[in-house]
Image (cartoon, rainbow, N blue to C red; front, side, top):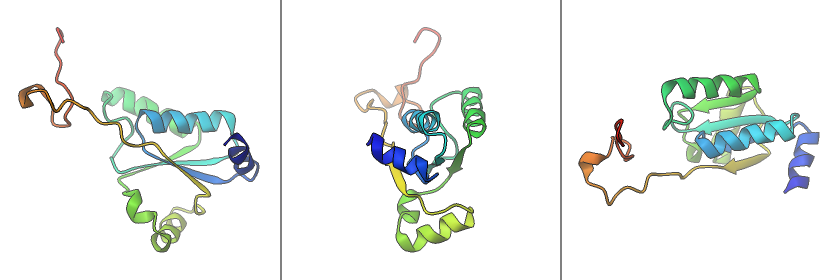
Length: 132
């Protein structure tokens, strides 16, 4: 894997990380750190990164991604633009080449289905207060 990514970096290739949660953001920033030549884009179907964090933390992360030249695109269903006929149009509208590599970093979900509904928020996470 190292050699494959290194080869992409030497060419300044465009790579995409699908998922702007903790794992996707961390992976994209690690790619930037070790392979600064890559053109990195994060895609997510949600409207912002790391939605389980507070608003201030989400804004901080977004600023840091921008400072590190990591493009973020939100509100996009990758399954729809991953098809060849849609992909060319999507990326060209953004002024970007087709990605030469895609990394998927999605799937973290709360597993609280055994808890009473009253203890869960609207996303399925446990509600907490000052006493937990």
